[in-house]
Image (cartoon, rainbow, N blue to C red):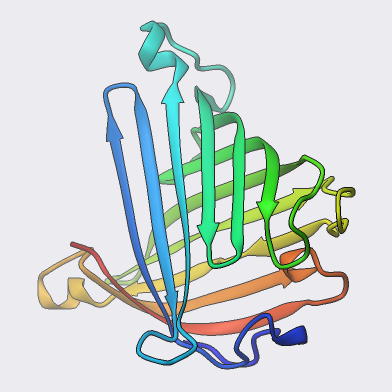
Length: 218
């Protein structure tokens, strides 16, 4: 839940509740991540947005180690973005990093093609950098997690309406409340801070919103 979202030109609601379902799994040759956002569920203005991001591990497929320096694996990465009036396809290379104190850190560099968005029906292909991470830590007996993502999309500067380079980040600080009740990792409460520069690629539409977050892991 947050307030003061950037709603310039009516592209969003100023105040809203967002329900997110997310799933991550690893398998023999790679990993998958999927999430679905439902904004203002139960209201007339309910909107939907989802991303599916499969990756194939060159190390697992070849049976040879791809590790070098802080890199522990190299992957073929893809993402399909979909929503109401939104659609984009991304393909590129991913690096799984091995950093001290991080449960995981991923760096993905994509070729990006937006087929439809709020700005235009078509844009020239651009690129995107995506970083995600999780750092579990403790303060006294209390378990916490610092996690989140950064997306930087750039170079979509042609087509029916050029898009501005834009950056969206969602760092989260969560307290493991479930651990206090003997069910660690199940219920977390905290804050996700959403920062979005040139929202949806629209120049000077910027967002800076603290969101109350409750996370239930099944």
